[in-house]
Every structure is written in C-alpha cells, then in structure tokens.
Image (cartoon, rainbow, N blue to C red; front, side, top):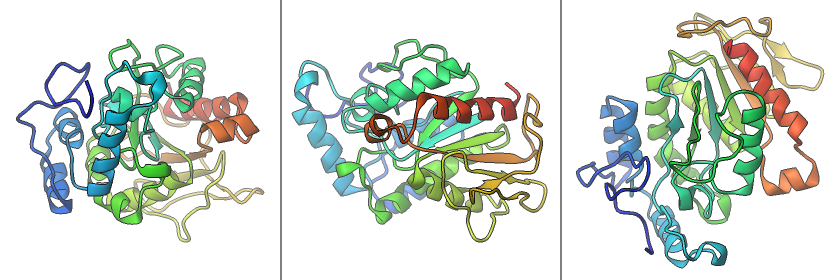
Length: 294
C-alpha cells in the first residue's frame, strides 16, 4: 500500500470510519473540534483532518515515497490523534509526529528513535506497560497517561509554521477540555510544546503567570485552578511550584493545582549529544508520577 490509509479499513486502533466528518479548513477544525462529545469522536475527526494543504501534501508524499528501510510497510499518512488513558492523570505533549515515526505507525512517538528513548523511560517509571512502542496494536498501554502533539501532522523539517500551529490548536483545546478535570500534571517535551501549552491553558481560563515562564529541563509551574498561580523562580530561573511533591492524590483532579513540567525533547540530536539523558528523563517522569499520586 502506498499513500495514506483510508479510514475504517482495518488499521489497528483507527478511530475513524468512512463516515467521519473531514475538516477542510480552519473553520471546519474549530467547528468539528468543539462539537466532538467524546475523546473517541474527537480522535476520529483529528485523524482525517485536511485543513493545512502544505502538511497534507507532505505527510502523503512521505507515505507514498517511504524510507528505504520501511519500503515493505504501509504508512498511516494521516494526522496522528491523541492516545492513551481517557481519564489521564498525566498528559505528555510533543511538537508533531515524525515523518517516518508517527506518520508511519499512526501513533505519536511510536516507531522512531525518540519514542524508543521516551517509552523506555516511561516504563522504568511505571507509566507504560512495556518499554517500547513499535506500532499501533502492539500491546502498549498507558493506563494513567495520555499523549498528544501540538500539531497533528508530520511537518517538513519538523517545523510547522505559526499558521499551521494555530490552525491545529482547536483539536488540542478540545482534547484538553475533555480530560482537564482528571489531570494533575502536564509534561511538555521541548520548547514548542511548552509555548503551545500556555496558549491552551489560557484558552481553558486558567490563571497564566506573566511573564510566561521560560522553558528549561525540569522547569516547573504550579497552576492554582481555584485562584492565582503559585510559585516562584528557582536559582536556575525556572518556575517552581510551592506545593509539596506528591501533594495531589488519586482520582479526579477537580480544582487541585495543575503542575506543568518542562522536559528536553528526547530527539536523536539531544540524546546523542547528552543534552538529555536517561537519568534526566526518569527524573521528570518520576516527578510527574509522584505529583499525580500514581
């Protein structure tokens, strides 16, 4: 098979069918995201979006041409929806699917080197059922964690435009709206996801600190959902919340504080150069687990 997988044709965990409505422009994205009543319905609509012509052309070209090492494999070639727990305590946000990772497998951080490093850490920290994520339907499970991307299509050179980010934003806004009552922690993988998340949290009506916190590995901001944001800058300049670690217990988060964590992206460049190590990743995800009471 070359080109994108038609919805409803048997791809493992494909949320869409031939009848799933397709967003053709930004207005459609807003309307279809806002009217999705469940995560399953939202994921289905995300997975067939065609609102950004440049991204559609690129993801489908990659799916048709393929990388030599994957020539015998079908490519998903569609937007990659959020996946994982429907009532997550921890949300992990990335930039966008990789051209030969999520764009090939249909699942974010699956089938590429970044995902290999990420899921190994999640497994060590007790947040994933297995230490790898190879393909949709491989048995991987995230019981208390959900993964999303700020942009749902693989972008050329891993760089979506500002317009593409903004066009895709309603999908994330709707997803956050459906899971926010359960969330205790959001982990932002990389600067792009960190910046995008503050816009999303503001859209949910949460009190966002001014100026917006600087990104850094291990940066922390504790958002008081019942009032003003708490926390101040630590000696490294990162915002750090004032609550004790592990202060949020199990169950629905409700109006309990929301912890936002910064984490260097586990890209090949970052892991090969030592900018981010297994120990550094484990520290962030163990922090997230503790705060979520898992």
